[in-house]
Structure formats: structure tokens, C-alpha cells
Amino acid sequence: RKEVEQDPGPFNVPEGATVAFNCTYSNSASQSFFWYRQDCRKEPKLLMSVYSSGNEDGRFTAQLNRASQYISLLIRDSKLSDSATYLCVVTGGGADGLTFGKGTHLIIQP
Amino acid sequence: ETGVTQTPRHLVMGMTNKKSLKCEQHLGHNAMYWYKQSAKKPLELMFVYSLEERVENNSVPSRFSPECPNSSHLFLHLHTLQPEDSALYLCASSQGLAGGIKQETQYFGPGTRLLVL
Image 1 (spheres, one colour):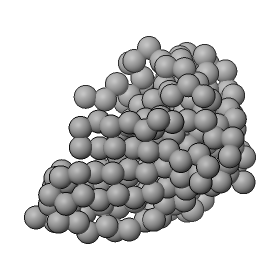
Image 2: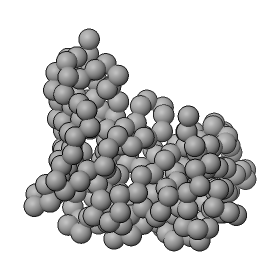
Image 3: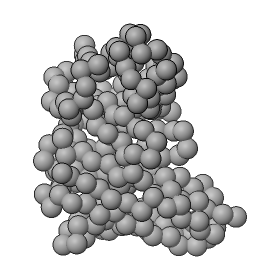
């Protein structure tokens, strides 16, 4: 059974701090990896895709570790607006391989 | 802002009712999806359509019946639901079929919050 595991949190982090969380996946044949963001009572929206070499988008950095089967998300200089649930998405093996994690709840405190 | 719309946004129905959820995407995408999101559970993929053909049915009970009349519209017909079917039902679309090696971004609608009494 394909599974994606995330620490549900909540992570309570002061504004301006750096926060990181991981997501582990069980299917070694997984091919594509994403981080989505979901605000309270809203739909998920793509935050960033995760590439093998790692990628950065402003304050956000995503890494992939295929050997240990996890992806990570690092947020630097956190803002109040970063408070949300971050969903890990792993795909592979066709449409039935679309698997979401339960999400990590992040709260940025002033 | 979103190119994917869903109606209704909220729905309360009895177990003997029949209702339909509607999704429309204005992005020119070829693939559409239905997801179920329950409290404290991950998003569950229910159905996948690519170019109006169903490509995936993840062991969803027959009381949920999808319909894709064209590449822009997706319906989820509901009948004789159970209280445990109460959840947020999200529709999504993507340019190509997600799940493979290509990084296909999915765009979600706002969802229909369903309560079954």
C-alpha cells in the first residue's frame, strides 16, 4: 500500500524563525513530488514542485532524498501569512499513484 | 481567482436524497479529478478522467457516480449516502494526467462541503 507520512503538528513557530518539516513515502517507484499549501477552509494550492536536485523559491527550499525516501520543506524568515497546512504529494505508477499526506499544520506566532 | 469552480459550495442531504455536485474548469485542461477530504484524514482520490474517459476508480462505493460529459465539466452524482460520507469534496484539473513522471500541477476548486443526515 502506498503511503505518505507527515508529522501533523501543529508546529508553533515565532515570526522570523526558520522551520523545516519532512514527509516520508513508502513507494520507492514514486516519480513526482510536490508541496501544496492549504489554508483553513480553502482548497489546496501548489506551493512548489520538488526536483531531484532540490529547488528554491524565495524563502522556500524543497529537497528530495530518494535513498531515504523523504522530501523536506524549509521556510526561512517565516511570516504570519505562512500559517497553513502543508500537504506532501507523491505520485508514481499512474493516476492511482497520486497520494497525499495528511498535512503538517504550521502556526506562525507574532 | 481560481480557474476551477464548484457548485454548490454547501449541501445538506438526507440519506434517501439524490443530489449532484458540479465542477467546471476554465483552464483548457485535459484531466479532471474528484477527491474526498475528511477531518484528520488525507485527501482521498476518488475518480480520474482524462480526455473525458475514466482512467481511475479507487474502489469508491457505487452510491457515488461520476460523469464527465466534456473536458470542462465533471459531475458527481450522489444517492443513498451514509453519514460517514459527510466531507469536503474537491474537484481538481491538470493539463495532462497527473501521477506519472511529468510534474503535472493540479488546480483545485473551492470544494463542496457535504453533510449527510
